[in-house]
Image (cartoon, rainbow, N blue to C red):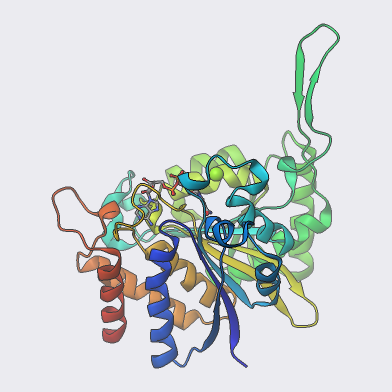
Length: 367
Ligand code: NAI
Ligand code: MG
């Protein structure tokens, strides 16, 4: 049976960039016999307008039943004044929560033709290809107790709690080792074991898991503050970085800026493996939002969504060769000077969203 993909284009530029990815999906079905059953649903503002909720139970069930979810972006000024529980973003949060997506994958890849777009020296970023895996469902963003209290003297106290259990650390580290094997076989585990108990437990747990199951993968440890420095100093030393929710939030944004534009950044979030089907829940999405400032103009860069599709091929379906084909088509198109406005140099010519799609299909035909 064909693998099932649930496509949720969402709002703003979401449907615009997804339209180009669907053309690429069709290309693969035709030329590479990579057949998927695609089912399209509504999420975010689009679902609010039609059903009064940012994600219906039916669409939620479709997501649980799919082999992978390909997501666009949600939100926009039209829904900005709604109460928090009704906001379009709640649709995405519900997906993340119910699919239990605990591992957030953020690659930082520099395509050769775009080396100049990075703010760093060319020799530092040329050929860069690293992957940050951020724990997404635990840590200080969720730990109890938390709150703001007024003390007897009238001053206030704000507090949060960082909690990690060994199963939480094991499962995200397990993903890191498995994915490193599909890459350059190296994991750097990042925490602050020098000042935090969760950091000590993190390091012990990753070390024990490595010894028990993943000795074939190279493992190193690094403090988070040093990691931030090393990412800017010499990022090519890294293959896979695995870290907690808070450090991962900051380090992945830092790594993103090694590469250039928001329109070029994909991501994936992985959940637990279903023991009966052997299938890992997964959602793939660009890092960018719905870009209301350019929505409807047909100028959005579709490459972050396309790279999210490429990640899906690689990490959900083990179709590494096909993923490479997508990545090479992107590289080729950029090398030939095709640029959407967000990555164009001042004064140079620009292509539209659909012209970028045309160029990708043309490059795939020629590869
Ligand atoms: P944004 O990522 O939508 O846009 C930031 C800037 O980057 C804008 O100038 C935009 O035009 C540009 N940009 C983003 N993607 C681009 C692309 N593919 N091609 C060319 N230019 C691109 O972030 P912003 O403005 O903070 O949020 C806008 C809306 O999106 C809000 O409603 C926000 O809540 C929502 N949002 C949704 C996310 C999601 O669905 N995962 C993530 C981030 C924001
Ligand atoms: Mg962030």
